[in-house]
Amino acid sequence: MLEVGIETLLLLMVAGFAAGFIDAVAGGGGLITVPVLLIAGAGPVTALATNKIQGLFGAATAALSYARGGHVDLRAQWRSAVIAFFASIAGALLVTVLPVELIRYALPVLLIAIAVFFATKKGLGDADRARRMPPVLFAATMVPLCAAYDGLLGPGAGSFYMLAFVSLAGYGVLKATAHTKMLNFASNAGALAAFAVVATPWWVTGLAMGLAQIAGARVGAGLAQKQGAKIIKPLLVLTTVVLAVKLIWDLV
Image 1 (tube, rainbow, N blue to C red):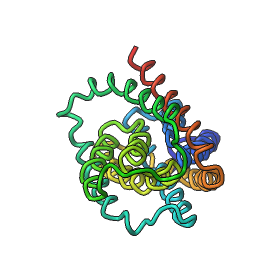
Image 2: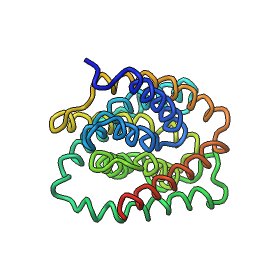
Image 3: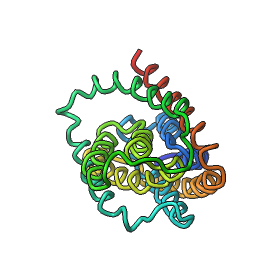
Image 4: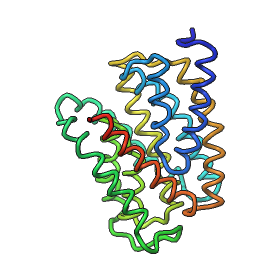
């Protein structure tokens, strides 16, 4: 049974396509889909839960696209994905324990710092650089931290994954983008598992938007693989700054 009218559903699917494109390149597609879901009449928790449903399709499509292009080995990421899944659930369950409001105030500052890093860091392209953290330690620390945040709040999780891969794992921008998608998928799945218990997602709407996400993600991942850092960096900086501004707007 449809939760919204046909015309509204079509508009939501257009939003899903745009979000899939942006997510596949730089992350931040929730900037489009969550507000549109709210406008369509979903409550805040329902909008977040529905956003996780449709986001799964985009993340999975982008991950497969980058894997086909040889930029990531998904089989080598399965352990990190499992960690991300359960860490995301833990983050969602910690919402009543951690100082969420304090985190919301600090988040815009962190996002702007990430934008400044990617905009001004010299030599930041598609070539790998020196690794500062062993893969095992990265999977044990950075992956659960980013995934737990995705379950706790969510906005900017892709930016945090990107920052970790570039600054600590030493990956080039394109390779880092490719490696975030499987983890984004896993942490989205974990958050959805938690939301499904405490919320009422719009399942039909989320699945329909997910189909549009598939198309958008394929286009976005294809463009990113052709252009690399030339398109990823500017879009990452733009979406991160816009997200920071939106969060500040919501706080005032």
